[in-house]
Structures are given as C-alpha cells and as structure tokens.
Image (cartoon, rainbow, N blue to C red; front, side):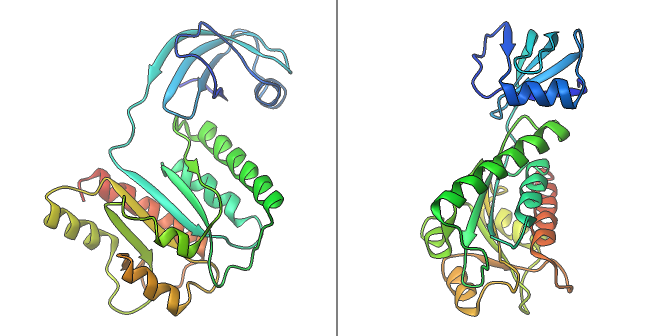
Length: 252
C-alpha cells in the first residue's frame, strides 16, 4: 500500500489521470510532503481505489497518473452506530475510530440527556467537520469505504425507522443484559445465519433515561452489557464496534 492516500470522491472509474482539489492537494503535497514520482492511492469512499503515481505535486492542484484501478469488496456485515451527541469534541474522535473499525453508517442523536443542542447552521458545520474526521481516518487506516454520516436525528425518530435492521442493540448497565457474543449467537441460532445489518445504540453522558431505554426495548432493541464497569460513551462505542466486527466476521 502506498504511503500517501488522497480522497477523490468524483472521479470516473476509468480515469487515467486524477487532478485533486485544493484541500486534498495541500494535504498531500504541503502537509505530507508528497513529491513527483511518489506512489499515491486515491479512493472515492465507496470502495474504489486507484493506484497512482504523482506526476505534478502542485500544492493547489496535484495531478496523479493512474496505474491500476480496483474495487474493494464491502464487508459482509453493515454496522450502524447511533450515537447520542456527547459534549465537546468527543464526537470527532468517535467518528474517526468508527471509520477505522469499518462502521457503515453513523447517526448522531439528540436524546433527553443530550447536553449539546445544535441549530441548523451549526449542524451543517458539525457534519462537515465529522466528514473531514472520517476522511482523515480513512486515509490513515487504508479503509476505502467512508461511513455514511446521517443528519442529527431525534431519539424517537430513530426508533421509528429501524425495521430494516436484522439486529438492534442498545448499551445497557441494567442487570440481565446479554453480552454481544450471546446476542449474535442467539440470532444465528434463530435465523440460521449471522445478522447482516446491525444497529448499535449508545447513550450520552448520563446514559439514556429510563423512559428512553424502555422505548428502545419496546422497539426491538436487545439490552447489551459491555462488562461491569461504567464506560464513557466514546469507549462504549469503540468497544462495541470492535467486538461486533470480530464476532460478525468470525460467524458469530
């Protein structure tokens, strides 16, 4: 894999040359010090990659010559992370790590105990910032797939639109919650296969309210424990994505 990676979202599959935009050119040339003749992997975030050579390291409009085009296979499972918005810049790091762990979709949520409330213009700025974080993470880890970043949703709206998921899980500290391994094994036993589309729901600081947890269970979410310790919401998101990815890849 080339040391340099560049995001090129609107390139034809059969392109022989790729001219990068100003931001990507600056990051590739001025920040990462890519020079003429260096190998570069360009990707569109939808699984397509171009193995290239830099033929013009212009800081505002770098040009890459395509040597090979390839399409990555999608993961055999698609995990959606529905994350109640935490305070500060924590969501930035959640998006980065979810991208590194192969999440297919990330849905920012507003729940009863969410302490972050965004007006429409601030939502747009935050979404753009999160998309940038996802792109940076994909470059770093070599993931050719970018997660879909949905708009900020209300908790109740999310619960009303979950029928397409094979398995719906919610992080829980309550007694009787199952482990991720047990939940996937139960699904496999019941359906004869591992789940393909999984929704993982994580609360904010202070967790979901009792009413929200009850509503989630009534909507078909299985309460899941991540152990006896109380985890930060970003830790819960990353821990679950790691375990889910492993269990699903191994057949659950």
